[in-house]
Image (cartoon, rainbow, N blue to C red; front, side, top):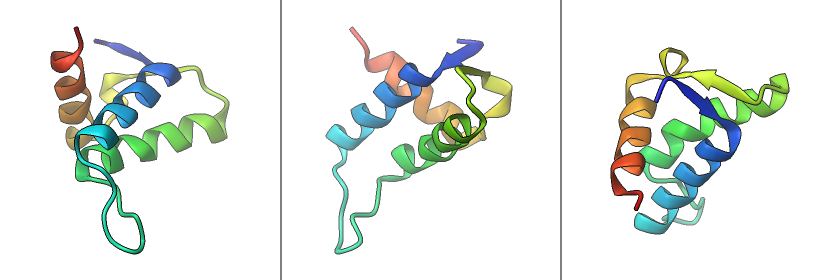
Length: 72
């Protein structure tokens, strides 16, 4: 997956939120969702519809790969 769209990131974040719901009084995201939340927010701020996988951190790429592997 070389190009990642905003809806794909949103789906991946929601997948990880369902697998590992937020915890604590601060509703802290699981590490996978948190890793994807930063590029998601930056894309929204920059009005970007897609980014390349090279622009993601290692943790975000791993979270995205985990989501893609779990997809039917």
